[in-house]
Amino acid sequence: NSYRVAILGATGAVGTELLELLDRRNFPLADLKLLASPRSAGKTLPFKGENLPIEAVGDRSFDQVDIVLASAGGSTSKAWADKIVNAGAVMIDNSSAFRMNPEVPLVVPEVNPEAAATHQGIIANPNCTTILMAVAVWPLHKIQPIKRIVVATYQSASGAGARAMEEVKTQTQAILNGENPVPEVFPYPLAFNLFPHNTPINEQGYCEEEMKMLNETRKIFGEPNLRVTATCIRVPVLRAHSEAINLEFAEPFPVAKAKSILADAPGVKLVEDWQANYFPMPIDATGQDDVLVGRIRQDISHPSGLELWLSGDQIRKGAALNAVQIAELLVEKSYISANSNELSAIS
Ligand code: A2P
Image (cartoon, rainbow, N blue to C red; front, side, top):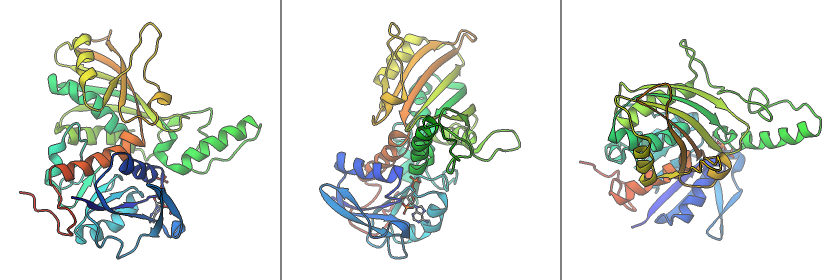
């Protein structure tokens, strides 16, 4: 069986990674359509030795498409979702537009693959920092329920898209040249700097990114009362996020047990060399499928606390890989029918 796939936002940081992953993972493609804004129409992107044309997304773009991998921002996802679903395709949406919609499954394949079965045409790909944390924390939570998570993030420029990554590079160069560049994508200079995540702040003082980590983790874990508090910080790293995570359990969780569980956990690579003081770093996580987890230690302030540190490629597992894994899940579990524009009936 093979499937007709469209990438909406094919020219973006996540879009180009989606292309690479569909190729590398040999996704069973009958057809691949690249969609972006009218700015990109007529350009091409290489795929399996060919140059595929990019089309401006339009009313007929989703005819004859089985799966749409959408990564063109929330407003674009909202604008096209009905058209996609009415055309009989399944939309795997990387934006936050539908994540908290109770009818839309929010899926991390290592955590809640079964949720994908309930889709009604849209499946949401979670927020990148949330995916990375979920992959690392779920294997422990399964063994012994977590009571509370306290997390601080160190988020790369890639989360804000290809232009943001470019801005950090040119800004760094300009500052080294003694210039004082004006930031365009970010509100403040990110080169040689850091700042709290620049999403809107609620009345409790939490920004949107921090609330995503709370609400999305609860939804993915199926734990509506899980306590999570996050501080999200943007750092001048190009494309992998890191997180310092403190976990509180009801009972002590032995460090050795946590390490052995994480060493075998899907999507996780245990990275620790205590002698060399070598632990996960964004530079090593970049371009890797696995979330690197290490520096696992007993919280000296709490008998039932564990500390861990992770780095994960925000564009890879934090976005594109998770979306492609969801598409693979749809195919493997027959949650979608091949080469048909009928929405698969899921009983
Ligand atoms: P384009 O390159 O034509 O602007 P990133 O997250 O890296 O910034 O990428 C955003 C992606 O979303 C790009 O592929 C971009 O296409 C696409 N995009 C942005 N706005 C629209 C739109 N209104 N319609 C379709 N695609 C869009």
